[in-house]
Image (tube, rainbow, N blue to C red; front, side):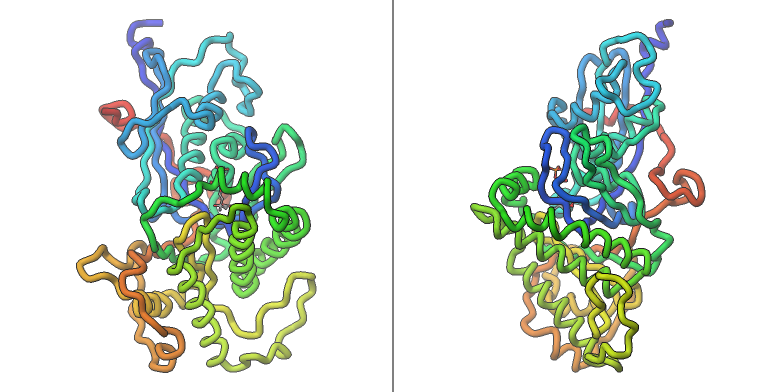
Length: 432
Ligand code: DP6
């Protein structure tokens, strides 16, 4: 080609969302391909509050792969990163990208990748899911290919495959040893349940004691409870969760979300040596959620009288007699994620503020979507705000479920994506 072509840098910039599992993934049956021992289900969070932005660039001048994470150069030789980059080889090894491999074989030129989050990494929120989803999407745009991208993202980080879609997403465990059927699929778009809100209660900036990858391996090796959960309990839980979501049944959804989070942390305790992700503040948040739900159940007409409700037509546990207000879930760390319907948010945020009074001169306490003000009745205060712990929660992030925005892929089609390829003008990857 001409000199200009030789010097050309092709780049794309994409964004990807964070997801929060309500039926947890914990344990691999194949740790190289990242194949899970059970299916999982998650809610994709809105990108306005939580997202990763990644620029990927290729040029014949790039002699090697390079990576920048939040402005700092990092090791591009990481096997999982390389597993995702390998899909760009021509011809690729076992590529899922159709069309690749039709051109004559050549050595893949270097790829430069720069990735950053719009939320502090120190907040301890899962960033690898959004990060790998974003990388894989950007590479696919860069090479102009389509295909089953969740299968590639899965090889970066298991939970990343669920960030390839908005709304409510299931990662199918799959049966095949090659992982071709271990893919993510949308269960429902976010438009299905617009009242659903998410509050992230950031309790700690500490690094987690045991990472997910190592932790789940020890659990697979030592926990009989995890084995039982994966084999006997999760399949039915997935079916029930899908039904609760389809029916927009907040009580069913919330109760199963809490129970699955608790069971995941029980498998961590059953791991030997045990793993502790929850801390004292996490446990106080759990207690507060139950007190708050109980208080509302007992101040509403019909409390404790399940007779007024139609019997369930399926095998999922019947809804609790008391209307559920909030549901918590915790991943491999102490931060709580609370699900609530929109009309509960202001009151519950006030309850959290009273229970964990913000440190003076601290960060802004409530962030993200605006939260209205609520005054708490005295009986609510005395029932749920028992012993306030000042400063235990750093801040609350208010967000909602993410789905196809105006820039997304075609109208009613709510599959990823998303942001059209936008080159960052000036420098490549904002590299130093
Ligand atoms: C507790 O996806 O981070 O968040 O596949 O080893 O990268 P690797 O693990 P990762 O594990 C996530 C575990 C979890 C539950 C979940 O997201 O389903």
